[in-house]
Image (tube, rainbow, N blue to C red; front, side, top):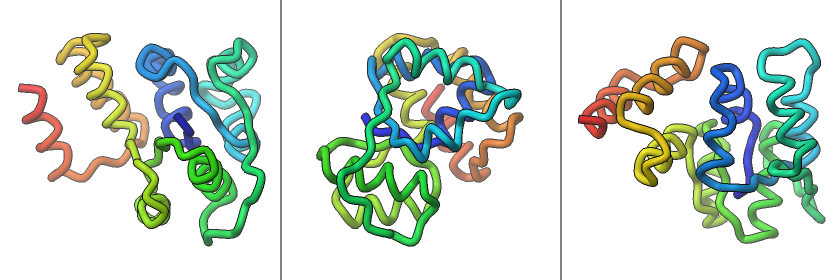
Length: 154
């Protein structure tokens, strides 16, 4: 599973980064994403650094990195997913469209939470708690999409 910065930043801020390890066991990020998420003193820094140091998040760069008109991290992540023919965790709407144009399977942060629920790694109560904590910490979910997610938890 290839990963962009948003999911790492958001889940580490609420101390739930390990959820990704439980769901996917290993993640791959390009160096541009590593640079984006590893800022000493920033919330979540130590949990992301520990995940990279322990090896369950690996840093691999794409062999080719054509410009897709996105942020550097998203650009590298999509090119890496394309090269490796792997799924990607992305949340930015423009980046999602770009990935889908290359037939890359896209998973959002919320999808990862529901996958954890489906695999019985977390309960419905915990899934709701994580969703709400994400929103409280700046993760954007439209009111309409939030209502859909809540209805899936009932």
